Every structure is written in structure tokens, then in C-alpha cells.
Length: 127
Image 1 (tube, rainbow, N blue to C red):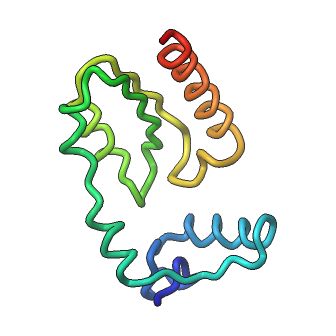
Image 2: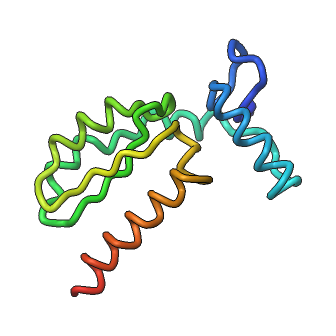
């Protein structure tokens, strides 16, 4: 087991960013005090081995909505944008202010949830 997050950015952690530490610390305090700050090394192997990018050109004509935070340091925004370019239509890109966890709260959450709602209404209700 290793910690999911640590206050020390140089220490070993699954998500070694200050943004990750801040998000999980607040989420544990406010939402789930019983959450344990640990993850297995095997889980980390699977997480870091996950690479959906090569599949994007192959999913067409399935509609694709990508919500990208350009300042995301866990899933770099530039990587997401490069992957988006490989996808066929129909596709839509929504840029969100902030980093990886900003999409879960505040203005980015409002933008992301509205974009998802509209996308699903367009592509699921129409069927």
C-alpha cells in the first residue's frame, strides 16, 4: 500500500500533486471521514497502464464529448487535446477552467455538468 496523496510533493504517492492533496483532504473532512488514504501498488500499475487514446479513432460513430481542463497535471490537458484530434465525428470539446479536480466543484462543475446534460440529451434522447 502507498498513500493516495501526501502533503510532501517529493514523497511517494499515487497522485503526487498539491491539488490532489488539497482535494482529497477536503473531501475526506467534508464528505467521507472514513476514507483511507491508501491504494495498492497493483492498482497503481493498472492506473498508469490505462491509455484510452489509441481507441478514440475507432469508436466512431459513437458520439464523443471530451471535457478538458488545460491546467490538469494528472491527465495533462495537452495530451487530452492531442487525443481529441484523433477522434472522428461526432465529437465535441469543452474546455474547463482549472485543473483535474476543479471539475467537481464551483464554476467548472457547472460548465461540465451542463455540457454533459446537453450532450446526453442530444445523443441519447434522440434515439
